Amino acid sequence: MSNVKPPTLKQFARPKQRRLDELLSKNAEGCITDAERRRLTSLVDEAERLMVENAKRLAAYAEREGSGIPPDAVPVTVWLTPGHAER
Image (cartoon, rainbow, N blue to C red; front, side, top):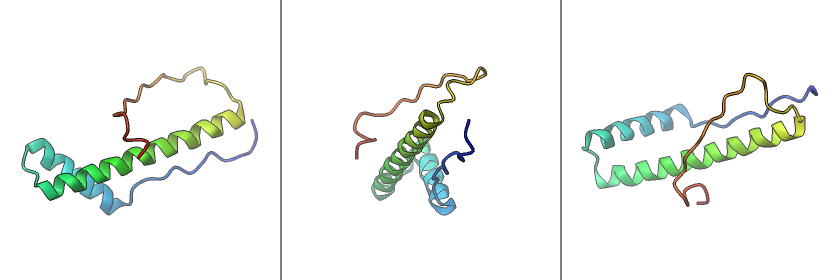
């Protein structure tokens, strides 16, 4: 394995993450306004794009490193709604 550092993964700024959490809670409680629902949809779309970008960075890194699957790796399935990642 080379001395190349793993990629830096992007994440939401804390205030944006807090707002997403608040809106998710309000939505779960059924007391979200139309404007808040639109904002929630926007934030979820942005979060999905960010997760896909991070996954691509990690996959490219793993491919460059050619390290293969670690012996203690656990397979993970991620479900996305069609179209969200392409927006």
